[in-house]
Length: 160
Image (cartoon, rainbow, N blue to C red; front, side, top):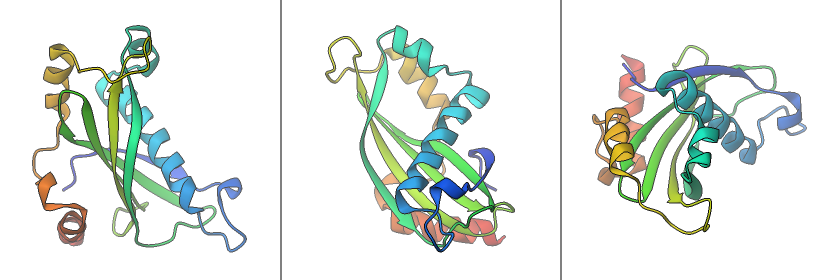
């Protein structure tokens, strides 16, 4: 069973190509929108409030695999979980599946770097945030094994 935060979303026409497939860049929009909602709904995190406290994150990179297409009008399930936390970085796993969570459509490990809004430079997470973040950490994966192995493990979990 997956212990990720979870929501569903309908694939919109504006995000698709002429064949009705979700555009590659649009997957990231769906992932990031879902993660923002997951943080608010599951962990009580309000990003606007954190920004006022001089805490923000910028995307450093996305490692993404497109495994199956998402289609116009389809309801997809979006899952997200924190897979790594350090003093100045978060790695978030985000997965898009079919509505019944039986097939993975795409998966990303996204790196977010902690920054100060005031200076625009890297900033270490506070100990309070580190403690809070560790409660959100998905501990049943080995981040160092890489995303290829993670996909294989997820496929085994989903098929159960």
